[in-house]
Image (cartoon, helix red, strand yellow):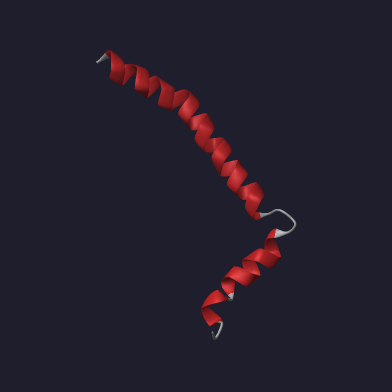
Length: 50
């Protein structure tokens, strides 16, 4: 059971911090100044006639 306890403590502390930082990075990446043009281009891909 010691391995489970160690993994649980790691997930409760550092794992939660890592997930929080990843979430913040995704939000910042999405809301950066140049993201609107890329998002508009990606949104119009299904509507393009090849």
